Image 1: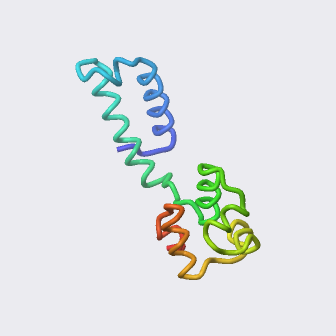
Image 2: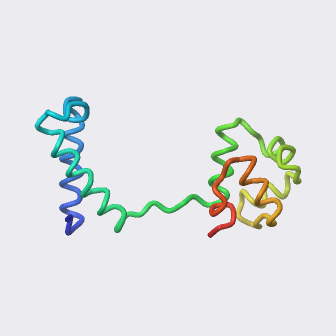
Amino acid sequence: MIKSEKEYSAIVERIEELLSNPENIENPDAKGYVELNLLSDLVADYEETFHPIKPPTLAEAIKLRMQERGLSQKALSEFLGISTSRISEYLNGKSEPTLKVAREISKKLDIEASIVLGV
């Protein structure tokens, strides 16, 4: 178990050293393979507790999907059947979608419902 940020930093540094040798990643018989896996598990447990990754906001998720799919706000509004001003409000965090629109966003943009609903 990692007990401090200092230990965490040292272990992350060691992991980076181990990752520099492809043998440690690909070959289960390599000396560094076991060490890399053990240290990675320790870091993952520590990060889960002390550096959790927060889910994206609705605005962040929509912006990501827009970028991935090459959609402008106008194209997105047409795709979802809502006004461009409403899209702008969602992207700026000024309003939240109705349940009906939230369903469409979740389905059509493949965004997890909990993100769309903010739960």
